[in-house]
Length: 274
Image (cartoon, rainbow, N blue to C red; front, top):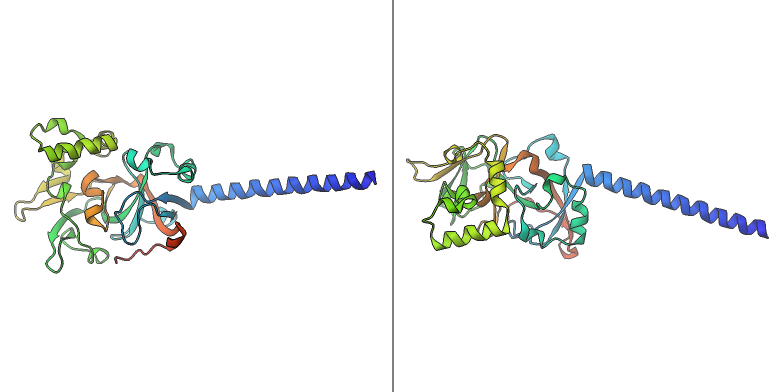
């Protein structure tokens, strides 16, 4: 009888050890997949409404953009070049846990999701859209197929070549309007933008990346080497490259694959323009 009890205890102990090993293997597998294959993100803004709405949580696959660079009009997830304090407040315990596995250089940063507009060396401008209201984007004088159905608002850098520098150093411009002062003060409180500007725009002068074109009377933006330019579909409610500038290649995470939360939005991300 005693032998039988001992045997049962040993069997239970062996099973516990095996279950423990299986759990460890599962956790290790999940971490490996998280580190090398998938990322997660919480969408903080309305920039991609109606396809993606604020506080949707996405699975982001990382493999594709490690093999090639994104194409014009593709939806891309990237780390913000700046610390976004307001978006950080929206993150929950799950988001903070998943971000524990992210590179330490992006601590305090959040992920944004937008469409790729410009690659290194491209000249980007907005032209009045004759067929619809708003403006269509021109890249090196033409609108790529993936962007033909999107209308944008002409704002920020496309109205003022000095916009990025004003946002980083509003004190250099004592004659700003009250509206501009309030805007730049808000951004400098909500974002660590000056620090990001000094890193991303290092060695660049304003005229290197933005200027008024005398012939067209429009502002043209040239994407510097090693940087990319993104804008959101919901242009009137998108804090994007028009406002904060360029995104380094190292900040690109991948492409959105699946909305996994909330459950009433569960399903693949619609990457086409609606």
